Amino acid sequence: MADEIAITLNIASRPYRLFVKKTEEEAIRRAAKSVGEQIGHYAKNFGYNDTQDLLAMVALHFAMTGDASETEAKFVNEKLHDTLAKIDTILSETLKDQAPTFFESPKD
Image (cartoon, rainbow, N blue to C red):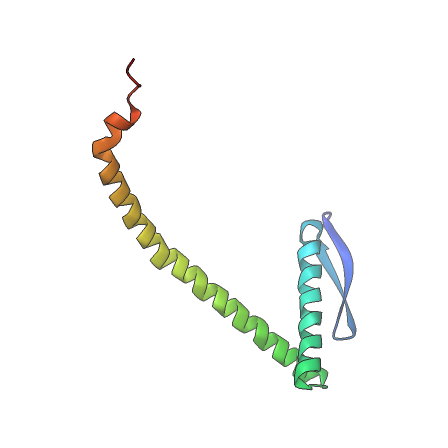
């Protein structure tokens, strides 16, 4: 706990005191700021006034964002990786025949 510090975050007009690692403080403050911004967005654009409704909509927003990120990461890991491996194989086979001439020293 020696590397932890106490911080207070204000979320939905309520203070929350947390003990966090110094290395995580900035990310946690950014996350709290993002929550506050989303609360403001839903309050302004959709007319929600109840704090519980606002927090529910913000929770849904971030859950959907996380799901989209997970789907994108899955695509990159599965589809894109396979495609890049095929391209690498094609390039390796193509360059295999040309490698001796490609790396030869220029003749005087």
